[in-house]
Length: 150
Image (cartoon, rainbow, N blue to C red):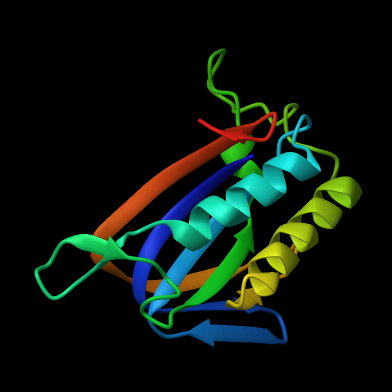
């Protein structure tokens, strides 16, 4: 599992007749590999809830999303699983099949909600327009395999 985390001042997602937005918080771009497990989902959720990537009064990254009352915009993005080692066209064979990936994506969002966070999802498998104002900018990549953050 790979999650690209962007700290934002605000963000939104639009897909056909769908629209969601958040103010201060995190945009999560979520990639589910074929080998991603439920253990990875729960480890990632716990890590992100506790991640101290918001600034305190001394401009040190000491605060979590819960500490600042932030929200999450969670966007599924299978392209994070691209293999670009050979040729010029990315291969997505390491991405999980859509039906199972959607189940794990929803489980991930539920795990974040169960931690007390407000989570606004994108539309799984849809073409989406994402708008955001990156705060910092702060962008961090988290990977998980076999239930461990790498």
